Length: 601
Image (cartoon, rainbow, N blue to C red):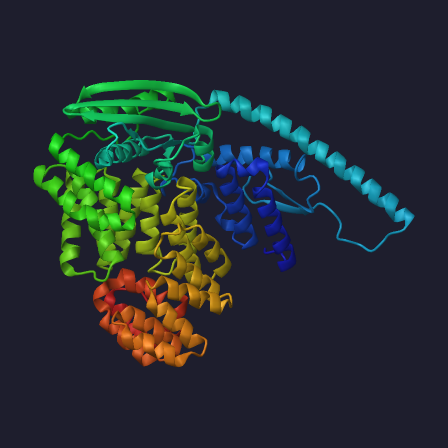
């Protein structure tokens, strides 16, 4: 049963107010759980508030989650009840609404904790109000007492059960002690490899390299870095490569007190680099009293092949999206040096797929190379999440949506905290299929795992635009880095649909990446001649389609789409879900076009 809209709005405000409080702001996991159960209840979807659903949607567990083996939902629900009691006994004591989570279930209840504003009242009513405040004060004391009892119970349970919530950890970029920028690729690539090795260990939630590398080359304060990355532990260190020798200094630091819990120096020959990575993982695992879990990898290759492989890895670290294109020939060099090195094939498969998705074509040749690299990687290493990700990309390009989703889900089961895979699942699969709510849930998880990722903000802004949530889209677009080619375009779109057309047009003109957006804006604001000039001077059929949609010219918009058919179902699926293309929805010609390129109707 859904609440009346005024009450829903009031509870939504209470939720946001509560999540901004000191008690919840420092606990991402409890905040995610609270937001999920409250929003589902307000949407009238309480049937989804089951342990199995919450485990998958909130805590990233696999679809075959077994609560008997992993009680994380019950554990976090107990912690949430305690935290709610603490909040309403202190910071939230004057809040007009109370959000409570009764024992034995996951459906919250909402209580109006205070009367609606009234005109000036008489003395008897003042006395009655005073009585009410005393009753409410007693209620707060009861909540505090309940919280204390619950805290003791939870503490007792904590000591007799092993910790089930993952430990959050971030690996900061290893310092290159060679002091030569040309050697940065080695320290950057090695950092990325350590992140990947830790990411497959059960019990760890490892922050992705896109967030960790935000600290590259900057003065470091461990506590501040841990706060920004929402990490309990930080790994930092340095690398010195001198001829055929390798020295790595590394330490694991507990963030809350800036205390090293494990410190190690490795002085080895360069050929021992894999053994050193393995020992670093073991040292961290042993220090945190964890066990090496499923999917543990140990590769062997030549020093030459691995050096080239690290160069390819560093391209994405150093250049972002553009780095994928730069990495393709370098991965191919690594494969030429060692045709049995699985990570190089997996990296090549993902790079090829991102390149074909990002730029102007999705040729048969690119798809064949993508498929071959992904299939080889899986044969060489069936437990490689990146290989499954590459295979998912290949399936999506071919319009094999079910197979693609299975591959993405398997990749996320192998590495549940990998925000890059999760973001690619959204951009390559969920958004082309129009599954916006699922996409936004996945992106919330990706944002928790990778809080400083520009890629996550960019894709979230795109998803929110498709979902028609303009104000939220503007917030995420504003968090994209100033150097991003899409920041002005995405922010302009969000502003345009909120009615700020002049500012949007200014941003479109300054950007130049999507001239079709400028043509659309001109057309929708009555500047028809300028819109037609954009269409006449633009050769990209997708940009022309946007302008013609703005002009209300269905025939020429559909004709433009027909000329873009080689781009494939992923790119065209996203384009058709743009709010600018709403004019074409329902047109039988577009339905036929969707079917022909492999998109569901």
